[in-house]
Structures are given as C-alpha cells and as structure tokens.
Length: 243
Ligand SMILES: Nc1ncnc2c1ncn2[C@@H]1O[C@H](COP(=O)(O)OP(=O)(O)OP(=O)(O)O)[C@@H](O)[C@H]1O
Image 1 (cartoon, rainbow, N blue to C red):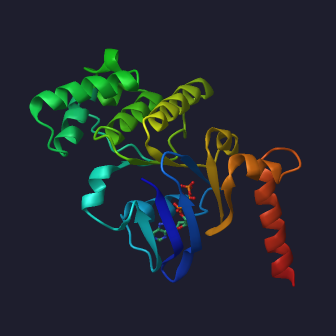
Image 2 (spheres, protein in one colour):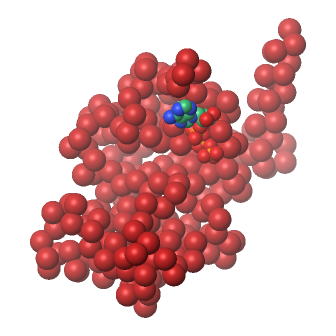
C-alpha cells in the first residue's frame, strides 16, 4: 500500500509545525523523511499513522483516509523511544505485542521465532530487556513493529544511538522487509542514510523543501551530498527574511 499526504498542516499552541506538506509514497518503496532536529519529522509520522489529526489536508494509506482504527492492523510503527517492557524478556515482550493482534497460541509462538530470527536476537530471547544494549532494544522494537506483517512500516529515527556496524545490519533488515513488498517510511537526521532510500522528503522548519527520488535529489547537488539542499533552503530563508 502507498501513502498519500495532501496539503497537510498542523499547529501546536498556535505555532505551525507542519506547513502545507504534500507528497506520495508508492507501494513497496523506502521513503526517507530527512531533516534537522525539530524540523517536524516525528510530527509528520504521527500524522501519517493517525495518532494525531491534521488541522488541514488529508492523509491516505492505500485508499483509506487516516485516522482510521482498522488501518492500524496494516500499519507498523517503531517509535523513537523504545516502547518495551524492561522487566520482561525479549520473547515475553513479543508475546505481549503479538497478543494485541489476536494471533492464536501456535501462530504467536511461530511468529515470535520468525521475527527474533529476522532481527538476530534468537539467542537472547530469554534475557530481560533491562539487560539489552541500545542496539538490541532497537532490533527488538523493530521485531515488535513488524510482528503482524504490516503493509506499511513507519520507523522514527530507528538508527539513533547505534554504532555504524549495527546501523548497517539494521538497514539490511529494512531492505529485507522492503523485499517482502512492505512500504517503509523512515525518519532520520543522518544525511548519509538517504542513499538507503528510494525517495526522500526533505523537511526544513516544517516545510517540505524537496521530494524526489534519491538519485534525482543527489543530481541537484554539486558535491553529491544531500546536506547541500538544506544549506540552500537555509540561505534562501535568510535572504527572504532580509528582504
Ligand atoms: N505535542 C506537541 N505540543 C507542542 N509542540 C510540539 C508537540 N509535538 C511537537 N512539537 C514541536 O514541534 C516541533 C517539531 O517536533 P518534531 O518532534 O516533529 O521534530 P523532529 O524533526 O522529529 O525532531 P527530532 O529529530 O529532534 O525528533 C518542535 O519544535 C516540537 O517542540
């Protein structure tokens, strides 16, 4: 399923945080939401999953307008701060999250084995999450987010705080999930990660400054680095403010 964002705006306390954003993510692609800290990436994800309602505009997943409770069964979400139970083991966490999707006992245990293997945590399944490293927690959160075979997966800064080697492993896992036909929306402020994505939405101070395939975006730069597009936007803002 694809995602369509049409003229979406959102304010908090009279301050416009998302400013008239539109873009369309085709089915089965990885779309990066890139932007500096505070630019509005998390807010955009919360709008897309229907956790908050837009003030203006519409968001559709497939042909269903969000927020929509039924669509949540087809959507996976990995929040920025891991929503795991520290006092439970990895497998007990998954049993809890899996239980929310009404799997029967046999399916539940089978799926726990599958997702633990996918994120390479099988040998740590009995360990309490409290004793997990940051990277292990990220991988377990990913396992929970994909547990119910979502058709669209939203990942909010999934690689924050994990080392470069593990980052590679995590991206390999996202690519493997994409190969199953899942659409992935992933926010990051690590500009180099754009090359892992098919498309990227560049968000700056709540505005969408660019949306295109990653190849085309990089062609717009002199040095092949996407940061340049943010520098240009920032200079244009400053120039505009001075006029
Ligand atoms: N519920 C809220 N109430 C008031 N302000 C909010 C709320 N949620 C977000 N904001 C503000 O909106 C702006 C964008 O925040 P958001 O978390 O979407 O940015 P971000 O790009 O995800 O940043 P980061 O990478 O640091 O997580 C920030 O100024 C933040 O303080």
